Image 1 (tube, helix red, strand yellow):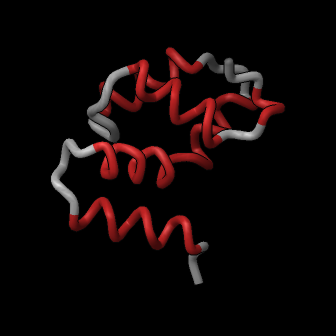
Image 2 (cartoon, rainbow, N blue to C red):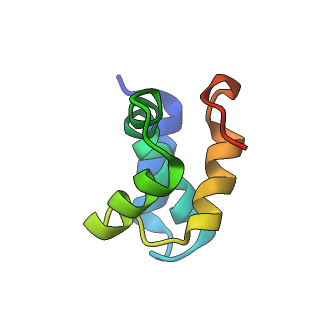
Length: 80
């Protein structure tokens, strides 16, 4: 079974309006493991955001992305 946070994020992404803050948060949570791997691989938040945004995986701005990263990623990731 998927973790509860992932199940909630999937439900929110499927039911809330596409550009709502709740949907943006859900998209970040669904990509969190990939984002963590990229950070651990040495990539910057800007590089990660640019790639995800260009791919269409996320459609919110970089500042929101940074806020989610600061709030939701482990402290050891060095997100400031």
